[in-house]
Length: 167
Image 1 (cartoon, rainbow, N blue to C red):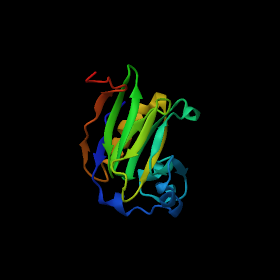
Image 2: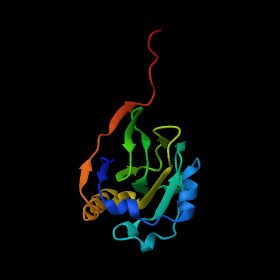
Image 3: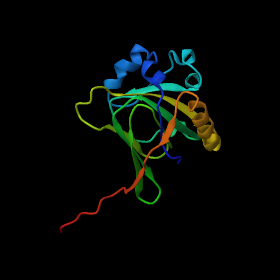
Image 4: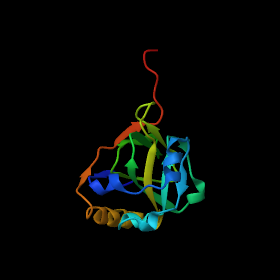
């Protein structure tokens, strides 16, 4: 998995987000929409779908076998986690401008940082072939850099199962 990064671009906070995308940002479970993407500026108009939710419980997406997801968060105050081989999971914060990837076949989830969050999660998602994933991730990074400066983010590797202590 590629390291997540963040883009600082004022245009991201002014994008026209379709009403149905905003309406579903308060629901549990990820919703996808296509409306209005082609009208966005490049490279945002190359995204596959809008995604929105309040949170997504741990799940896999077997219908997307052979693909990887690259997501740009537009509205977010969340924590993303994904299970990895070896009983570990990757964890990182997700705020507006965060770009991160998902293996849809791995267990993954998205949770708000606070229960009474002001708004849910809204993002743009690119669904790319797993065989082209690394090249597409790097190309999108270069394309997004034209909108604003990029900065790296910290990603933690944590045990997937916690051992009880004090017994």
